[in-house]
Image 1 (spheres, rainbow, N blue to C red):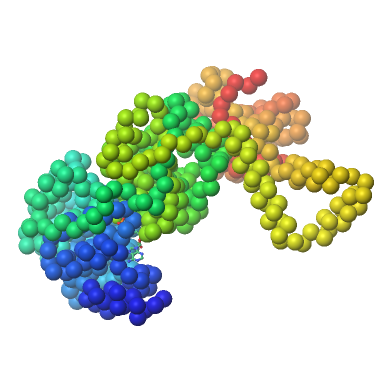
Image 2: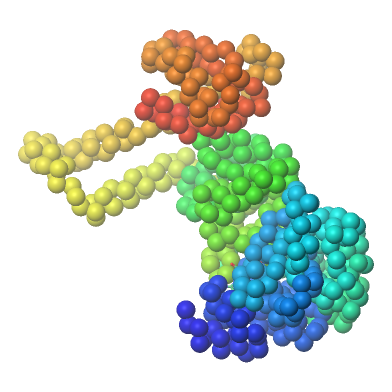
Length: 533
Ligand SMILES: Nc1ncnc2c1ncn2[C@@H]1O[C@H](COP(=O)(O)OP(=O)(O)OP(=O)(O)O)[C@@H](O)[C@H]1O
Ligand SMILES: [Mg+2]
């Protein structure tokens, strides 16, 4: 890292040397435009409304001067940052911790769903910066466990959402607790006119700092849409997933229930996806985020709880499975990709009736969303062929083929080279697990088959013919899904198929666990329910 250069560039902002060290450690070489514009204004003591596109470094734009203005020796809470979601509170607190690392500042996130006693203990030990969600902050203010009489600076991250209907009363109440000679900062990628007007109520002579761009979205994000009848949306999504190279993707749904249903639907089709929404426990939310941030999970299916602020490097695609109701949310959702100068793709799936909503989004964001044709089944096959070719070419490049070459050599005089190669491919692909060979059927979807109330029967196309035994099935289901073996109800093995009964609420879990398992050398595949012939 070029420390001299970074020091010089950030040095123009006249920052504490230890802050610059923190920025250099994070890999920041020069300030982004919003940082260049906003930092001096905040340092000069102004109230600031900062607007810049998603992923352009607004967090550091307010965090750098915020840290600069802290009295490091004083252990009172001196700055308060309010964010709309818990995940964002955690992320912002971490970023502030990193920037202020060499200043040894004390920062904590405070959010609902976490033990309040533990938060109270942390607060008692003295923290200088608190990053929190409105509900929990209010809770602490009302209990007098959070003292804000020394707060000099308040930041509303995602300000337009914080001042929108859902949050504004909480925000007003929080602000009433804070000394009025404070500095107030509002940041967001979007600032609708009416919110901008309203915001002045809470500020004194605010400076409006904007990285002026005509369109609200980042140019590095390719924006496309597909129009399909409502009932084919899932099929459309699966096809897109099949032909698209996605390193990590976030799929947005309108409702929590929609998220759960889509995750179940994807799982029964053999895709793994993690859900994130407000009905999960905080521990579940944290686990999902950890898996997704580390790259262990490829697909995150979420409500708008993940729409704003989250910064995850690997996200190459954002998919609007349901079109956002509000054009601003479109901007924020797709902004989870294409961050910090990287490129990304945003896909929106609409039904014909949602076309007008799409046009509205285009008008407000001043961008064009390109219509694309859904890949056909033939495209999916074509894509598979491409994949096979790619793997072949890699093997050829790698060499180490002498053993196989000797076999070909012994055949080549007598047989056609094309036939040998084709047969070899067929052989190698046949050894791979084939999707449609094993199927699980979820009987819940096609009427009562005689399962006891509250139970679901899962059918396997594995039967006595394959030498399957009762113990094998119990062991497989219990071991792999974590379901206690005494919860597995009746097990029946017939000539060509078997089934187990499991409690309704375990069914999806069992199915998703089973489909990942090798069983008798083959992968079990969970198909969407269809009547058995
Ligand atoms: N000066 C810089 N140099 C290099 N990278 C930076 C710089 N400033 C910020 N970044 C990185 O850019 C990414 C996006 O920053 P950040 O999350 O602050 O964006 P944002 O503007 O708040 O976006 P959103 O509107 O989505 O909340 C982060 O990974 C951050 O570490
Ligand atoms: Mg942000």
